[in-house]
Length: 150
Image (cartoon, rainbow, N blue to C red; front, side, top):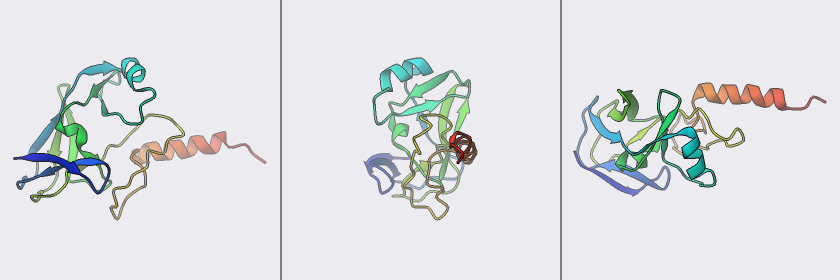
C-alpha cells in the first residue's frame, strides 16, 4: 500500500492512499518519541499545532513524527486508532478506495476547556468538534455550572 501526504479538504495536509485498502488492514503506525504530559506541555505550551497522541496509561503521549501524524480527524471516518502493547496503529474500518483521504475520529478528551477543537470534516454527522461525544457532554455540564445565575 502506498500512502502520500498532500493538501486536504478537511484540514491542512492529509494522508491519501494510492491503492485500495482492505477492511481491517493496518494502514500506519503512529510513531515518535514517548513524552510525559509535563514534557509535552513544556514543548508545545505556546504552539498552535501539535501531533500528540495520548496513550491509554494516562501518563504518556506519542509525539508524532511519521506519516500517521498527518491523518486528519473526521466524524465519519474510514479508519480507527488502536493501542496494542504501547504501539498505536491506524486500521481501516471499511474498504478504502485509491485516492481517498484517510481519517479517524480523534475522540479528544483533554485540553484547554475554552478550546472547542472545531471540526471541519464536512461529514453529514459532523458534531462540530474533534472532542469525543462524552467529552462534549462533560464540557457542556461544566459550562452550565460555571455560568453565573441571574
